[in-house]
Length: 179
View 1 (cartoon, one colour):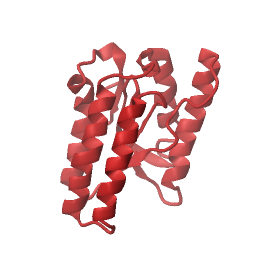
View 2 (spheres, helix red, strand yellow):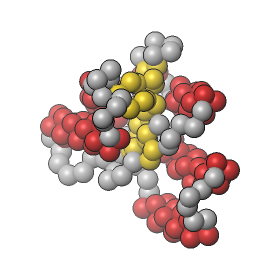
View 3 (cartoon, one colour):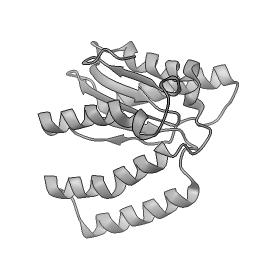
View 4 (spheres, one colour):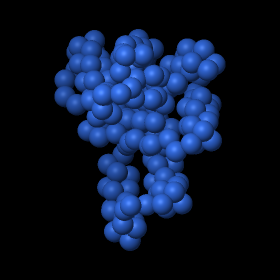
Protein backbone atom coordinates (compact mmCIF):
# COMPACT_ATOMS: atom_id res chain seq x y z
CA UNK A 1 0.00 0.00 0.00
CA UNK A 2 1.30 3.44 -0.89
CA UNK A 3 0.19 6.89 0.23
CA UNK A 4 1.38 10.26 -1.01
CA UNK A 5 0.09 13.78 -0.58
CA UNK A 6 0.05 17.22 -2.14
CA UNK A 7 3.04 19.35 -1.15
CA UNK A 8 0.83 21.88 0.68
CA UNK A 9 -1.40 19.40 2.51
CA UNK A 10 0.24 19.50 5.95
CA UNK A 11 0.83 22.63 8.04
CA UNK A 12 4.57 23.34 8.45
CA UNK A 13 4.31 23.29 12.26
CA UNK A 14 2.75 19.82 12.18
CA UNK A 15 5.43 18.54 9.79
CA UNK A 16 8.26 19.91 11.96
CA UNK A 17 6.84 18.48 15.16
CA UNK A 18 6.04 15.12 13.57
CA UNK A 19 9.53 14.81 12.07
CA UNK A 20 11.16 15.57 15.41
CA UNK A 21 8.98 13.06 17.28
CA UNK A 22 9.52 10.43 14.59
CA UNK A 23 13.31 10.80 14.69
CA UNK A 24 13.30 10.53 18.49
CA UNK A 25 11.09 7.42 18.36
CA UNK A 26 13.30 5.74 15.75
CA UNK A 27 16.43 6.42 17.85
CA UNK A 28 14.85 4.46 20.71
CA UNK A 29 13.47 1.72 18.41
CA UNK A 30 16.26 0.74 15.98
CA UNK A 31 15.38 -1.43 12.98
CA UNK A 32 14.77 -4.19 12.15
CA UNK A 33 11.34 -4.05 13.76
CA UNK A 34 9.16 -6.97 14.67
CA UNK A 35 5.48 -6.86 13.70
CA UNK A 36 4.40 -5.40 17.05
CA UNK A 37 6.92 -2.53 16.83
CA UNK A 38 6.00 -1.80 13.20
CA UNK A 39 2.33 -1.64 14.18
CA UNK A 40 3.16 0.67 17.09
CA UNK A 41 5.05 2.98 14.72
CA UNK A 42 2.13 2.94 12.29
CA UNK A 43 -0.40 3.70 15.02
CA UNK A 44 1.67 6.52 16.42
CA UNK A 45 2.75 8.27 13.22
CA UNK A 46 0.82 7.12 10.17
CA UNK A 47 -2.60 7.32 11.80
CA UNK A 48 -1.83 10.82 13.09
CA UNK A 49 -0.72 11.93 9.61
CA UNK A 50 -3.87 10.41 8.11
CA UNK A 51 -5.91 12.39 10.62
CA UNK A 52 -4.23 15.64 9.56
CA UNK A 53 -4.68 14.83 5.87
CA UNK A 54 -8.36 14.08 6.36
CA UNK A 55 -8.82 17.54 7.91
CA UNK A 56 -8.40 18.96 4.40
CA UNK A 57 -5.45 21.33 4.74
CA UNK A 58 -3.85 22.99 1.74
CA UNK A 59 -5.27 23.73 -1.69
CA UNK A 60 -7.12 20.39 -1.88
CA UNK A 61 -6.61 20.59 -5.64
CA UNK A 62 -7.70 16.96 -6.03
CA UNK A 63 -11.23 17.87 -4.94
CA UNK A 64 -11.68 18.96 -8.58
CA UNK A 65 -12.97 15.82 -10.35
CA UNK A 66 -11.08 16.57 -13.59
CA UNK A 67 -7.78 16.92 -11.71
CA UNK A 68 -8.44 13.85 -9.56
CA UNK A 69 -9.19 11.85 -12.70
CA UNK A 70 -5.69 12.66 -14.03
CA UNK A 71 -4.29 10.86 -10.98
CA UNK A 72 -6.73 7.95 -11.31
CA UNK A 73 -5.88 7.53 -15.00
CA UNK A 74 -2.16 7.52 -14.20
CA UNK A 75 -2.68 4.80 -11.60
CA UNK A 76 -4.78 2.64 -13.93
CA UNK A 77 -2.57 3.15 -17.00
CA UNK A 78 -0.17 0.22 -16.42
CA UNK A 79 -2.57 -1.94 -14.40
CA UNK A 80 -1.92 -5.55 -15.42
CA UNK A 81 1.46 -4.68 -16.99
CA UNK A 82 3.61 -3.32 -14.14
CA UNK A 83 1.29 -3.96 -11.19
CA UNK A 84 -2.19 -5.17 -10.29
CA UNK A 85 -4.42 -2.56 -8.70
CA UNK A 86 -6.80 -3.74 -6.01
CA UNK A 87 -8.19 -0.39 -4.91
CA UNK A 88 -7.34 3.27 -4.59
CA UNK A 89 -8.82 6.56 -3.47
CA UNK A 90 -7.90 10.03 -4.65
CA UNK A 91 -8.80 12.28 -1.74
CA UNK A 92 -8.79 16.12 -1.94
CA UNK A 93 -5.13 16.34 -0.82
CA UNK A 94 -3.72 12.79 -0.84
CA UNK A 95 -3.86 9.39 -2.51
CA UNK A 96 -3.93 5.79 -1.18
CA UNK A 97 -3.23 2.84 -3.51
CA UNK A 98 -3.40 -0.88 -2.68
CA UNK A 99 -1.67 -2.95 -5.36
CA UNK A 100 0.72 -5.80 -6.10
CA UNK A 101 3.92 -5.21 -8.07
CA UNK A 102 4.53 -7.58 -10.95
CA UNK A 103 7.98 -9.19 -11.34
CA UNK A 104 10.85 -6.97 -12.56
CA UNK A 105 9.09 -3.72 -11.57
CA UNK A 106 10.29 -1.63 -8.66
CA UNK A 107 8.08 0.27 -6.24
CA UNK A 108 10.03 3.52 -6.52
CA UNK A 109 9.79 3.46 -10.33
CA UNK A 110 6.03 2.87 -10.28
CA UNK A 111 5.35 5.64 -7.76
CA UNK A 112 7.71 8.00 -9.60
CA UNK A 113 5.74 7.32 -12.79
CA UNK A 114 2.38 8.02 -11.11
CA UNK A 115 3.55 11.18 -9.41
CA UNK A 116 5.65 12.47 -12.32
CA UNK A 117 3.03 12.07 -15.03
CA UNK A 118 0.18 13.38 -12.89
CA UNK A 119 2.20 16.40 -11.69
CA UNK A 120 3.15 17.41 -15.24
CA UNK A 121 -0.41 17.00 -16.51
CA UNK A 122 -2.04 18.76 -13.53
CA UNK A 123 0.45 21.65 -13.67
CA UNK A 124 -0.24 21.95 -17.42
CA UNK A 125 -4.02 22.02 -16.90
CA UNK A 126 -3.88 24.46 -13.99
CA UNK A 127 -1.09 26.56 -15.55
CA UNK A 128 0.94 26.22 -12.37
CA UNK A 129 4.56 25.33 -11.84
CA UNK A 130 6.70 24.02 -9.04
CA UNK A 131 6.28 20.93 -6.94
CA UNK A 132 2.77 19.48 -6.77
CA UNK A 133 3.45 16.41 -4.62
CA UNK A 134 5.41 15.94 -1.44
CA UNK A 135 8.89 14.67 -2.28
CA UNK A 136 8.48 11.25 -0.66
CA UNK A 137 5.69 8.73 -0.12
CA UNK A 138 4.71 6.21 2.54
CA UNK A 139 4.69 2.55 1.69
CA UNK A 140 3.52 -0.38 3.72
CA UNK A 141 4.30 -4.01 2.96
CA UNK A 142 1.18 -6.14 3.29
CA UNK A 143 1.96 -8.96 5.70
CA UNK A 144 -1.02 -11.30 5.33
CA UNK A 145 -4.63 -11.59 4.14
CA UNK A 146 -6.02 -9.89 7.23
CA UNK A 147 -3.68 -6.93 6.79
CA UNK A 148 -4.67 -6.76 3.09
CA UNK A 149 -8.36 -6.73 4.05
CA UNK A 150 -7.81 -3.95 6.61
CA UNK A 151 -5.93 -1.82 4.05
CA UNK A 152 -8.69 -2.25 1.46
CA UNK A 153 -11.30 -1.42 4.07
CA UNK A 154 -9.35 1.69 5.08
CA UNK A 155 -9.24 2.90 1.47
CA UNK A 156 -12.92 2.26 0.86
CA UNK A 157 -13.97 3.92 4.13
CA UNK A 158 -11.56 6.87 4.00
CA UNK A 159 -13.96 9.28 2.20
CA UNK A 160 -16.75 8.70 4.74
CA UNK A 161 -14.29 8.93 7.64
CA UNK A 162 -13.17 12.32 6.31
CA UNK A 163 -16.85 13.33 5.89
CA UNK A 164 -16.55 13.79 2.11
CA UNK A 165 -19.26 13.51 -0.51
CA UNK A 166 -19.04 11.14 -3.48
CA UNK A 167 -18.18 13.99 -5.85
CA UNK A 168 -15.15 15.02 -3.81
CA UNK A 169 -13.14 11.82 -4.34
CA UNK A 170 -12.31 9.21 -6.96
CA UNK A 171 -12.72 5.75 -5.46
CA UNK A 172 -11.84 2.52 -7.26
CA UNK A 173 -12.00 -1.08 -6.12
CA UNK A 174 -11.86 -4.16 -8.31
CA UNK A 175 -13.65 -6.12 -5.59
CA UNK A 176 -16.61 -3.75 -5.41
CA UNK A 177 -16.25 -2.34 -8.94
CA UNK A 178 -16.67 1.17 -7.49
CA UNK A 179 -15.53 4.23 -9.38
